[in-house]
Image (tube, rainbow, N blue to C red; front, side, top):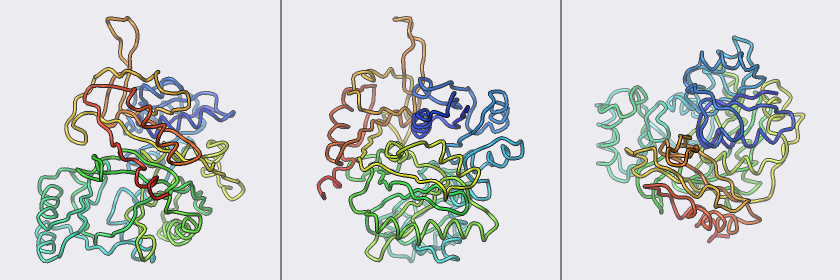
Length: 428
């Protein structure tokens, strides 16, 4: 089978790597891909949001399955377009992807169908939201309604921080139309975790759970990012809790979407806070997480393609989806200045110097011609550049491997968190 993966980040490199292990996959295409995916297949110079061009490429290259990686093409209706053209594709429809593309829709869905979540107020008026914040005791969470690349959420510890976040979202329009509405939520306390699942609209099969790190600096300091690393499994999320979340959150969400006339197929991702009162949903996403996919997919035993085909065609209940007991840790190497302004085009050295069992998933990279050597070289091409991932029989061993190798890779301005999975290892 020929497979097309839409997107160009670390998640898409991990998907290409895992799908490439299937005996049934003959050729892999990535659009637009990156320097890492180019070693596994063919990159196509098509942006993830150029839906018509992607559909033409799928026809031209006789693609048997397209996998939509990022949330934006899903929110813009890539699945609907491909289905109209008779092109098989993995992912939820545009109306189903609203579970991520509109936090207002998602919150109302949870409240209506009794899915445990934080209390929240919704505002379409800056003045009304400002008035509400002025009389509310911090901390609180201010969220833009629409897609904001993981950066439209501010945990405000003071009233002033909340007002500044509101101003950025609704007045300065830092995230454009995503700020037409805002949610102001209670600030939950506990441990954050992610539980993703495959679903064909009927059966829900949870994946191995994971934790990711959103703030840019050690100790969860600094602004939020798309994700600075992650690990699997979380030491505080046992099999019993996974079952509880599956039955209280994931299955009810898929059932609720069907009741709302938005049948859901693909990956459903629950971002959770494990509170003293039990699990609460912070947000839903409509796709694999990034950087979570990079520590979850290596734990999948068997054929990812077979699982995806069962999701697309139905029959997920007939599959046995199994996960390894190995632990995985991944740390993102980011460009200087990220998540703010940053420069690109810096050569990356040391990619061949890591140990043979280390996985290096490319995110913001590209190849260019090096005039001095006459060969191709890999350079930085984004905010999050690489994710260095290692597995082992314990989180401690996996973490040791990551930090024993990551310093061998170098590029100008590089920075990364040094505390990924540190607390988890200490709590073991």
